Length: 68
Image 1 (cartoon, rainbow, N blue to C red):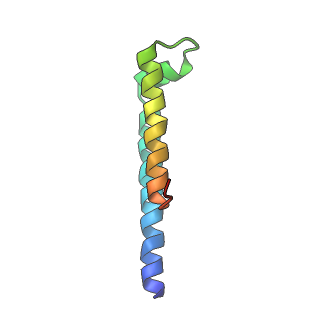
Image 2 (spheres, rainbow, N blue to C red; image 1 turned 120 degrees about the horizontal axis):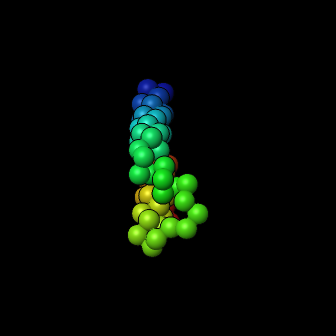
């Protein structure tokens, strides 16, 4: 019983680490940095940032098995 819970906990940590690594690498790209630093964005850039956080939120919800 405890081994199953430990494996589930390790899977959650693995997903969280992968998500953080992806976000870290994404924030290192010049394109992403320039878009985030801008004060006035074109609609395509705004959509890209919105989609990024929407996908991140959906992954978070799925990762913790939250049903909406």
